Length: 228
Length: 410
Image 1 (spheres, chains in turn blue, orange):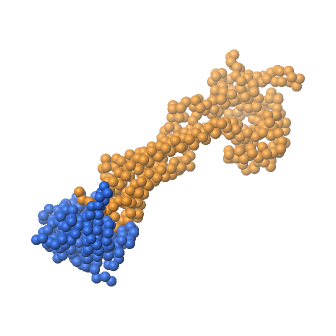
Image 2 (spheres, rainbow over the protein chains, first blue to last red):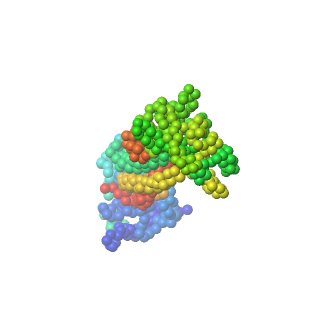
């Protein structure tokens, strides 16, 4: 049994345009311990979102390997990767990506329904999460009937409903105003902690980054020392 | 599966009309394709049915004779076929006499075929003829009448201005054994006017009972020109025809199909060709459905990307697209079937009135629309198949959606 949750070894990612290679990530290593919260900062184009997507198996690296509790994710096919994401990962994006056609409760339950587990249990869990984020009375509301901050809180509930081992957040507060930024960030951190999950947050908000115990910085696709 | 069905419906159908315009147009396309196919096939079926019916009712399903020579002993003739026919298949067998002669009125003369039946008045032949009486009554013997009753086709009655109850002469050319040509004259009383379904038959055929005309016709009650057979299933005529043709003897057997062989073949080919041509319309409609599905997919790339990120596999995304294709195909085709049936019932009334296609063009007194449920089912299956075929492209595209691309925030 591994003592780490996730280990990325020599992750490189390049895009090809007009026969030219555009490197985005260059041999990046990263290890995340169970229950650990990490923030990754960097300028636009530094490769932080790409790294997060690769760690979340939404994209594939050009080179390098990712292990999740000793399991090499590169060996999985689409079906098993989907199952892996469903059971182990939770995503929070800059935009909430809630499905407009579904209520808040239905949006939170999407991953649960995909897993095929008992729906009553899922509903209880979703309502519990809604209560934790203070939006229990909004369960039957549609995304269009909610504010930006509320929508993002619903997205956090959606990420946590399956009790994932790792939550990946890409600029989770990038779309919110100053007040909501801190509320949502604090809420996300405390919820992740309460659910014993690990957290990787990508942001360019240095103020937000300072509130995390572990802070990594990317520059031109490589880890770089923090300049204070 | 419940989730996939729910996602399929919700992604396909929005709350606003304009949001659904592409889906609606796809449905209309598939629906119209099905309508064209079903209505056209019903018209062809109706034409074939009307033609068949007019042939059956007058000629029976099978006519057996001795190569045009008279049958001198009906009972002996029937006995020769006792092993050929299964009595369970036969509704009625009617010996008949055909004589060609002239009908004259006020200087107008028409050549006609007099068909004399020795059949039971309550049998299949007379009950079919009785149903075709549009004016007057049937041939039931009136003991007080001095004249023999006759039924004539509507065309003949119209051209000679014959009225019910009118008595007119029938002139029968007669060749004696010495070769002299003479004529026989018989007065008939017009008791009923028939609509025989075909223009030619209405102008050429007259019917009467053989019993009072034995001497006039030159035939005895046990003699005939041939025997007409009516079967429970008209298609049995073809089987019995082939059996009779294999018998040794001078027999000839003609089915209802032989009477208009080329026409029936032409209808068959026409039906097949029209089915192929109109199926192309469905194919065109399927492009519309494909374009709607592509559009729908592009509009939902973000949603599919999100669903993939939370664990929906590419296979399940394909299933969602497939369900959408099935919904489009099934709803479009079902609508097509319902609208077709509505159109057919309305069009049927117009056709019966001769408002759209004058029946005389097709030498029929009436053209019906006949819905064959096998055809409707075939069109439905065809429409669903074509729509599913159209979904192959969108399904392939859906399976290639990369979550990263859909989740880029712009």
